Length: 76
Image (cartoon, rainbow, N blue to C red; front, side, top):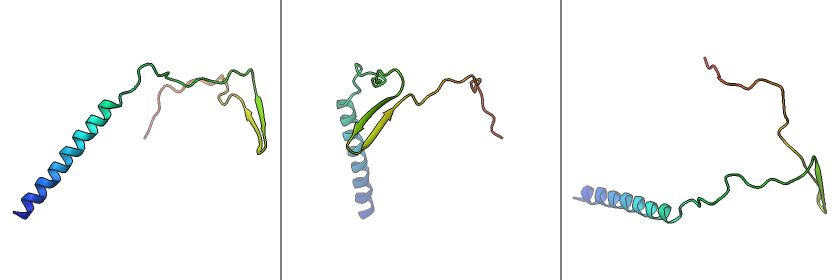
């Protein structure tokens, strides 16, 4: 009898947690008007900002290249 009560309690707790999670997720839907990418600083090349702690230099981190793109990989 004790095992049945324990299993029923565990099952009830699992079902309740699942239902409450589903309610929470459905109440906090993704905003369809949100931008897919954040805005980017509009700088020509490198930009430096001085602060009391030091200097922050912003610049492009991805450089153009002439290498061929990788279209497939091989794993042995």
